[in-house]
Image 1 (cartoon, one colour):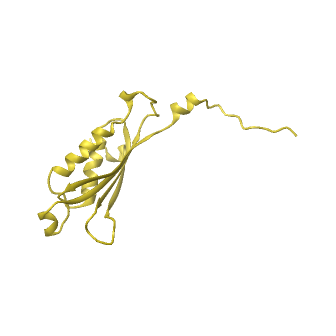
Image 2: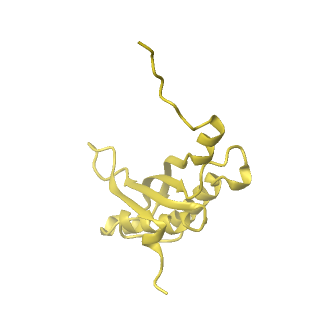
Image 3: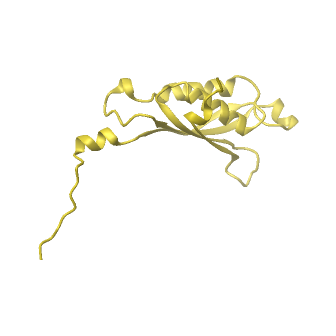
Length: 140
């Protein structure tokens, strides 16, 4: 009996061209004015933010000009946190989505925002928001 091996048309070069990629920021902890309670409006609290940014184009290899820049993403998240009071984690996450979609290479965003000091027996409470570029398009 002859052993049949599966055939593939993908060379390593073709695999790179078709591979999608995601840039991540994990566990960025910032001080932020966030929350609807009076005490939360009077003092800043720790917030942890994580983001997944999925690229519209295939993985570009080592071409740094075509890679999503996570330094710009972190700077944008820091700007959101320092821009003034935000009532809800969902609102913070929505603003982060807007920052992420400023990069035209980003097609999909997943943002996780957690307040870390609400309950002593919970690591964090918050919200996860996922958006795709088509869903965020403004009506014309």
